[in-house]
Length: 111
Length: 114
Image (cartoon, rainbow over all chains, first blue to last red; front, top):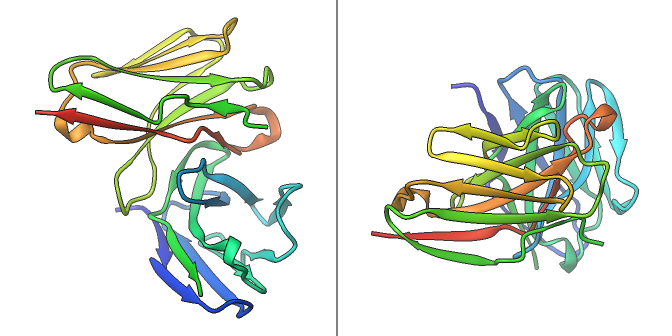
Protein backbone atom coordinates (compact mmCIF):
# COMPACT_ATOMS: atom_id res chain seq x y z
CA UNK A 1 0.00 0.00 0.00
CA UNK A 2 1.18 3.50 -0.80
CA UNK A 3 1.87 5.35 2.40
CA UNK A 4 3.73 7.89 4.50
CA UNK A 5 6.28 6.31 6.82
CA UNK A 6 7.91 7.98 9.81
CA UNK A 7 10.92 6.72 11.71
CA UNK A 8 11.40 6.32 14.53
CA UNK A 9 7.91 6.23 16.03
CA UNK A 10 9.32 7.19 19.43
CA UNK A 11 12.48 9.19 20.00
CA UNK A 12 14.09 10.16 23.27
CA UNK A 13 16.85 12.75 23.22
CA UNK A 14 18.72 14.77 25.78
CA UNK A 15 18.37 18.48 26.26
CA UNK A 16 20.59 20.19 23.70
CA UNK A 17 21.52 17.01 21.80
CA UNK A 18 20.74 17.26 18.06
CA UNK A 19 18.10 14.88 16.76
CA UNK A 20 16.83 13.97 13.29
CA UNK A 21 13.40 12.62 12.45
CA UNK A 22 12.75 11.04 9.08
CA UNK A 23 9.81 10.71 6.74
CA UNK A 24 9.47 8.75 3.54
CA UNK A 25 6.59 8.32 1.12
CA UNK A 26 5.63 5.91 -1.63
CA UNK A 27 2.85 8.13 -2.97
CA UNK A 28 5.10 10.15 -5.28
CA UNK A 29 3.54 13.34 -3.96
CA UNK A 30 5.36 16.57 -4.77
CA UNK A 31 4.51 18.44 -1.57
CA UNK A 32 5.77 17.40 1.88
CA UNK A 33 5.01 19.01 5.23
CA UNK A 34 6.16 18.86 8.84
CA UNK A 35 3.68 19.60 11.62
CA UNK A 36 4.28 19.83 15.35
CA UNK A 37 1.51 18.80 17.73
CA UNK A 38 1.90 19.44 21.43
CA UNK A 39 -0.33 17.73 23.95
CA UNK A 40 -4.04 18.61 23.51
CA UNK A 41 -3.19 21.29 20.94
CA UNK A 42 -3.86 21.64 17.25
CA UNK A 43 -1.16 20.42 14.85
CA UNK A 44 0.91 23.41 13.76
CA UNK A 45 2.73 23.67 10.43
CA UNK A 46 6.49 24.13 10.73
CA UNK A 47 7.47 24.15 7.04
CA UNK A 48 6.74 22.54 3.72
CA UNK A 49 8.45 21.67 0.46
CA UNK A 50 6.79 22.25 -2.87
CA UNK A 51 8.99 20.01 -5.01
CA UNK A 52 12.47 21.21 -4.01
CA UNK A 53 11.35 24.65 -2.88
CA UNK A 54 11.54 25.05 0.89
CA UNK A 55 8.96 27.22 2.66
CA UNK A 56 9.39 28.12 6.29
CA UNK A 57 6.49 29.36 8.43
CA UNK A 58 7.23 32.78 9.90
CA UNK A 59 7.01 31.59 13.51
CA UNK A 60 9.02 28.38 13.14
CA UNK A 61 12.03 28.62 15.48
CA UNK A 62 15.50 28.68 13.91
CA UNK A 63 16.26 25.58 15.97
CA UNK A 64 14.24 23.59 13.43
CA UNK A 65 15.69 22.76 10.03
CA UNK A 66 14.63 20.47 7.23
CA UNK A 67 16.15 18.63 4.29
CA UNK A 68 14.54 16.98 1.31
CA UNK A 69 17.25 15.11 -0.63
CA UNK A 70 14.76 13.60 -3.09
CA UNK A 71 11.03 13.28 -3.77
CA UNK A 72 10.59 10.36 -1.39
CA UNK A 73 12.42 11.51 1.72
CA UNK A 74 12.24 14.46 4.08
CA UNK A 75 14.07 15.05 7.35
CA UNK A 76 13.42 17.25 10.35
CA UNK A 77 16.52 18.34 12.25
CA UNK A 78 16.26 19.88 15.70
CA UNK A 79 19.64 21.40 16.40
CA UNK A 80 19.41 21.92 20.16
CA UNK A 81 16.21 20.43 21.55
CA UNK A 82 14.68 22.09 24.56
CA UNK A 83 12.07 20.71 26.92
CA UNK A 84 9.47 22.76 25.06
CA UNK A 85 10.15 20.83 21.85
CA UNK A 86 8.70 17.63 23.25
CA UNK A 87 5.77 16.89 20.95
CA UNK A 88 4.36 14.65 18.26
CA UNK A 89 5.90 15.45 14.88
CA UNK A 90 3.69 14.66 11.92
CA UNK A 91 4.87 14.37 8.35
CA UNK A 92 2.33 14.78 5.56
CA UNK A 93 2.37 14.68 1.76
CA UNK A 94 0.06 15.84 -0.98
CA UNK A 95 -0.22 16.07 -4.73
CA UNK A 96 -0.29 19.76 -5.53
CA UNK A 97 -1.72 20.54 -2.10
CA UNK A 98 -4.87 18.45 -2.23
CA UNK A 99 -6.04 16.58 0.87
CA UNK A 100 -2.70 15.82 2.54
CA UNK A 101 -1.95 12.28 3.72
CA UNK A 102 -0.34 11.99 7.13
CA UNK A 103 2.16 9.58 8.56
CA UNK A 104 1.74 8.01 12.01
CA UNK A 105 3.98 10.59 13.67
CA UNK A 106 7.12 10.50 15.81
CA UNK A 107 6.69 11.23 19.49
CA UNK A 108 9.74 13.13 20.73
CA UNK A 109 10.67 13.17 24.40
CA UNK A 110 13.38 15.52 25.66
CA UNK A 111 15.05 14.62 28.96
CA UNK B 1 -4.71 33.88 17.48
CA UNK B 2 -6.53 30.63 16.86
CA UNK B 3 -8.05 30.86 13.39
CA UNK B 4 -9.85 27.50 13.56
CA UNK B 5 -11.69 26.54 16.71
CA UNK B 6 -13.42 23.40 17.86
CA UNK B 7 -15.10 24.52 21.05
CA UNK B 8 -16.23 21.09 22.23
CA UNK B 9 -13.26 19.06 23.52
CA UNK B 10 -15.42 15.94 23.70
CA UNK B 11 -18.73 14.47 22.58
CA UNK B 12 -20.44 11.30 23.75
CA UNK B 13 -23.14 9.66 21.60
CA UNK B 14 -25.15 6.45 21.66
CA UNK B 15 -24.63 3.98 18.82
CA UNK B 16 -27.11 4.55 16.01
CA UNK B 17 -27.71 8.21 16.87
CA UNK B 18 -26.36 11.26 15.07
CA UNK B 19 -23.01 12.79 15.99
CA UNK B 20 -22.57 16.49 15.22
CA UNK B 21 -19.11 17.99 15.46
CA UNK B 22 -18.73 21.73 15.10
CA UNK B 23 -15.97 24.02 13.90
CA UNK B 24 -15.67 27.81 13.62
CA UNK B 25 -13.11 29.84 11.73
CA UNK B 26 -12.14 33.49 11.65
CA UNK B 27 -10.02 33.86 8.51
CA UNK B 28 -12.27 34.89 5.62
CA UNK B 29 -9.53 33.84 3.17
CA UNK B 30 -10.10 30.16 3.97
CA UNK B 31 -11.88 28.54 1.05
CA UNK B 32 -11.37 24.81 1.52
CA UNK B 33 -12.18 22.82 4.63
CA UNK B 34 -11.30 19.30 5.64
CA UNK B 35 -12.13 16.86 8.42
CA UNK B 36 -9.59 14.34 9.64
CA UNK B 37 -10.09 11.42 12.01
CA UNK B 38 -7.31 10.28 14.31
CA UNK B 39 -7.05 7.04 16.26
CA UNK B 40 -4.51 6.70 19.10
CA UNK B 41 -0.95 6.01 17.91
CA UNK B 42 -1.91 6.74 14.30
CA UNK B 43 -1.66 9.80 12.11
CA UNK B 44 -4.73 11.80 11.06
CA UNK B 45 -6.72 10.21 8.24
CA UNK B 46 -8.59 12.33 5.72
CA UNK B 47 -12.35 11.92 6.05
CA UNK B 48 -14.25 14.48 3.97
CA UNK B 49 -13.80 17.98 2.59
CA UNK B 50 -15.84 20.88 1.27
CA UNK B 51 -15.08 23.82 -0.96
CA UNK B 52 -16.42 27.26 -0.15
CA UNK B 53 -18.49 27.21 -3.34
CA UNK B 54 -20.66 24.49 -1.78
CA UNK B 55 -22.71 24.36 1.40
CA UNK B 56 -22.96 20.59 1.73
CA UNK B 57 -20.94 17.52 0.85
CA UNK B 58 -21.92 13.93 1.57
CA UNK B 59 -19.93 10.72 1.63
CA UNK B 60 -21.82 7.74 2.97
CA UNK B 61 -22.58 8.26 6.65
CA UNK B 62 -20.61 11.50 6.73
CA UNK B 63 -21.94 14.92 5.73
CA UNK B 64 -20.20 18.24 6.09
CA UNK B 65 -22.18 21.49 6.12
CA UNK B 66 -20.63 24.91 5.54
CA UNK B 67 -22.20 28.23 6.54
CA UNK B 68 -19.89 30.86 5.09
CA UNK B 69 -21.74 33.85 6.52
CA UNK B 70 -21.40 32.42 10.02
CA UNK B 71 -17.89 31.06 9.34
CA UNK B 72 -19.07 27.75 10.69
CA UNK B 73 -18.92 24.17 9.55
CA UNK B 74 -20.19 20.95 11.02
CA UNK B 75 -19.66 17.24 10.47
CA UNK B 76 -22.65 14.95 10.81
CA UNK B 77 -22.20 11.22 11.28
CA UNK B 78 -25.37 9.16 10.83
CA UNK B 79 -25.73 6.57 12.17
CA UNK B 80 -22.84 6.67 14.62
CA UNK B 81 -20.92 3.45 15.20
CA UNK B 82 -18.50 2.46 17.99
CA UNK B 83 -15.70 2.34 15.40
CA UNK B 84 -16.22 6.07 14.85
CA UNK B 85 -14.77 6.73 18.31
CA UNK B 86 -11.69 8.86 17.62
CA UNK B 87 -10.40 12.43 17.68
CA UNK B 88 -11.86 14.56 14.88
CA UNK B 89 -9.90 17.54 13.58
CA UNK B 90 -11.31 20.33 11.49
CA UNK B 91 -8.79 22.00 9.17
CA UNK B 92 -8.85 24.88 6.72
CA UNK B 93 -6.70 26.23 3.93
CA UNK B 94 -6.87 29.27 1.66
CA UNK B 95 -6.07 27.44 -1.57
CA UNK B 96 -4.18 29.41 -4.14
CA UNK B 97 -0.48 29.09 -3.44
CA UNK B 98 -1.03 27.63 0.02
CA UNK B 99 -0.44 24.15 -1.40
CA UNK B 100 -2.40 22.34 1.29
CA UNK B 101 -0.98 24.25 4.24
CA UNK B 102 -3.59 23.39 6.83
CA UNK B 103 -4.67 25.33 9.89
CA UNK B 104 -6.14 22.88 12.37
CA UNK B 105 -8.59 23.11 15.23
CA UNK B 106 -7.74 21.48 18.54
CA UNK B 107 -9.85 18.42 17.91
CA UNK B 108 -12.98 16.88 19.41
CA UNK B 109 -12.87 13.47 21.06
CA UNK B 110 -15.92 11.48 19.91
CA UNK B 111 -16.99 8.49 21.94
CA UNK B 112 -19.76 6.29 20.56
CA UNK B 113 -21.24 3.97 23.16
CA UNK B 114 -22.70 0.58 22.14
